[in-house]
Image: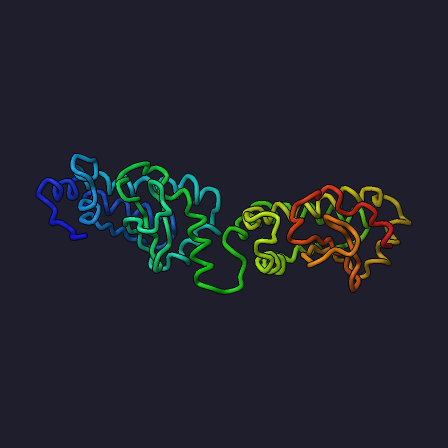
Amino acid sequence: MTVVKLPLTARKSLRDDFESQLPELEKKLSTLLQVPWTISFDAALLYSYAEEGSWARNKPGDVCQAYAASAIYSLEHLFVRDFKTLGIEGLNNAAFKHVMTLGRDESGSVSYCGVKIVDGEMRLLYAPGKEGVNIGNVVHQLKEAVDVAEKEAGGDKLGFKARLSIEKDWTPKEAELTAAFETLIGKKVELVPSFEEVSKSMKAAGKKAERDDWENSMGEVVFDYFHFLKYNMKDFGGDDMMQEGFQEGVPEDKIGFRIVEKLEKNTYNECVIDDGILWIQTTADQWWVNVAQVGQGVIDLL
């Protein structure tokens, strides 16, 4: 499509409604993400695609300002609020050019508006014929956009969504959970969640995995396996004989979680002792299924 020259009314709207506010918008964005960011919108492209009489055609500057302001608001009150330093670092690394752009979605994957990380830029998108529609939702899928960008960049590290889940649902609870196991067992113990290995196993399983959103819930799921093991070992607390039996049977003083291709005895999950470590294990196709039964009968292993 040929990009048309902006008429005077459109240029005036850009100057008065957008460019005059651009320094303040960039300052707020940079402060929020803790490194200098710029905003570079193709207003002429937006105007060229907009229908006659539409908001984007009549007031393109107003629309550009709304996209930028809405994105910054959602970044502050959703993304940064929920994901904090980990989210900021993930976004800054994925969108390494530290520039927010605006463009037309040509993939058909955006209903009204959306966001992708493209060539190191955070690109706000509008669907064809939807210029200026539902602007408030423009960066609501930013977590997914960062995750996709990381995967496209390659590497074996934990995905962005998995890291966020671990930070939210595992890390704040790990110390208390460890202390509870130590009280039950009567000895110092190390919990081994094996997040990197679990992630590799789940990715390798592909469509065999029970849920395709496993990365979103990794921290919560792994915590649940350990939590229910703790619950089902409650009889060990204060029982010297049972504690001694555990200490002898698990000489490495470690309790771990892992994904295996096939369970030895049970259908959903089981505990085994391997090289002196008590392992909670399940398969990718039984991920987060019947978790409450984990550790039932663990005394029979000792």
